[in-house]
Image: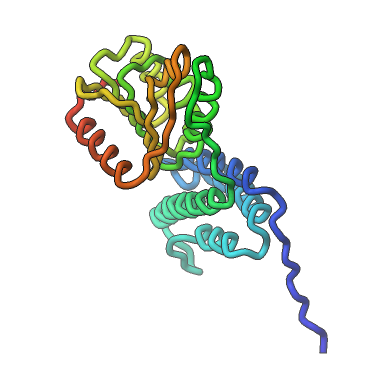
Length: 262
């Protein structure tokens, strides 16, 4: 009697850093399938599935629970051997996109846990602008759901140096003082044409803070001037200060004036 062949386990072949970058890019690409018709998007979806499957195989191994979850998401919806209506095909397509997004978000978080903690210098001397930029921009690039920036003295560099590094899947909220410059509004309007952005102003804004998903940091100076001429700091908030700071700024946000970005 012939022996059963045991499936060969393929171990992960790329480090978490590369896998994280690749899956984050695929999550961005997935958003381009939203709101489309299943038949019109079929070729793009097929290409996306092939590449994503290959990344998951290479990142987590084959077989693996992560790959099994991908296969499950790939067949989301209702199916019938006799065929299904165009309406059901569209429903299935939209379900697949949602399942794929949920899967990739969870895999990205799993990969983040495998990475070493970001080493943020925390205290910056006069002239150490690049050190501050390097640390804050590296943190900004890790956001998955939402970034909330609070800074009374913005300039357009906030977009060029920081917001532009936010993954396309994340929402950007920016809260500033009543004196938002024309250049900031102009760049914000350009950014809002392709990404999710809300900009609001309030006279009650005095602090400088950056909230990334469930974490938050405070800075000693406005982001645009940090460490330019005077020393400053970038310190992560711990509980209960984190929740208190987030709640305070969310209340200011709720009462703030929305800047029209259309």
